Length: 63
Image 1 (cartoon, rainbow, N blue to C red):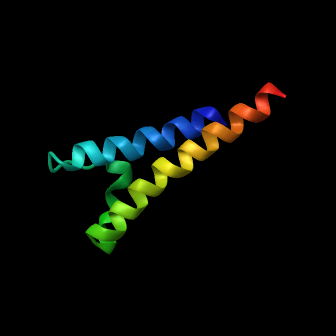
Image 2 (image 1 turned 90 degrees about the horizontal axis):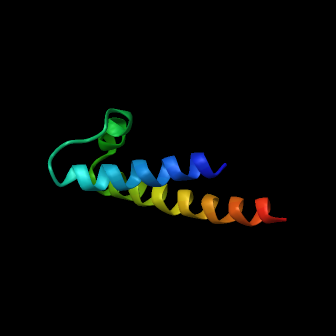
C-alpha cells in the first residue's frame, strides 16, 4: 500500500513541478479537460490522498 501511496504523491508533485514548465505527464493530461482550477484540485488531492494512505499503511504494518 505504501508503494501506491508513494506513486500518488510523486505523480501529484511531478505534475505541479512540470506544470510550471508547460509540460504535463501523459497519465494526468485528462485532468485539464475540466479547466485549470479542477486540475489543481486533483493534483493537490493526489498529494493529500497519497500522504494519508502512506501514514495509515505505516501504522498498520507496525502492528
